[in-house]
Image (cartoon, rainbow, N blue to C red; front, top):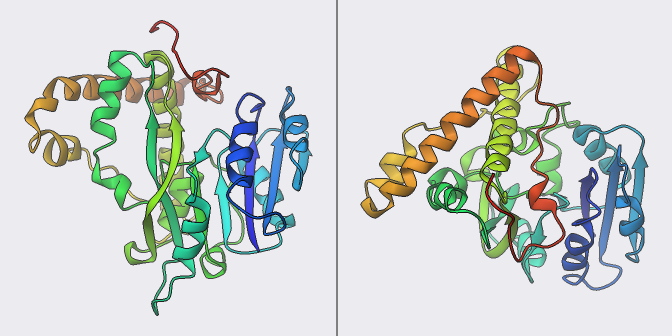
Amino acid sequence: MTSVVIAAYNEEAVIGRCLDALLADAPRGTLDVTVVANGCTDATAAVARERAGVRVLDLPVAGKAAALNAGDAVAVGFPRVYLDADVVLSPGALPALVAALDGPDGDPPLAVVPGRALDLRGRPAIVRAYYAINSRLPAFRHSLFGRGAIALSAAGRARFDAFPAMTADDLYLDGLFAPHEKREVAGASARVATPRRTGDLVRRLARVRAGNTALRAAAARGAVTTVAVRRPARSSWLRDVVLPRPWLAPAAACYVGVTLVAALRARRERRTGGGGWGRDESSREPTLASAESDG
């Protein structure tokens, strides 16, 4: 039986659609789903409990790693799927991920992910320009991060004991597997809600950068064990995206500008200890059809 673990922090606006898409993709009784609400001050747990067959844990303290570990402790089967609460899998995606891990070839992958389907409806021009470059970066085709959905076989899950207390859980998992052990599954996609405003995008990128930096530092001092924590290819946007497609040069200017601002923000918050959770709340707003004005 496939087990799905969803760590959810104040996700009442989005957890319902995440679960509905998931449950519609599997016959009743064939899927073990655990939602771990952690430190929530909204109705996340109540919304999840409305879905039949969903196990709900309600932890008093916020923390994604602790939530994932709590979900792992009660999950009953494999493959094991780790899914972000704001991600919606496409129809057929879950069976495709499971089938890829159970593949007929003699050396199936240990970790698989769906492709990214970026939701850019109503987003301002700068956000769309940023993702015009980001969506074409080859790193996302050969890695596990950036989807909010990762499926591991039993052998893949055996690579680690527990999630470390860090925010970059997807980069951590990516580093556990050699390139030939992980795969993007054709025909499966995860709808990823992009930030609605430029400021929200900068905050999201700063948070990701800070989490990745912390993970690399932990790996360097031996606090976490990985195969190799991927370092960013700083010129990939130019070499792999813009030079073959020169018409994307204006978008590249936005991409570089946003990336630099996010890097400066992350560095400043590292010095001051500020920034808090830094999560993009705009992509979790209930209505996705239109965006508010850019900010």
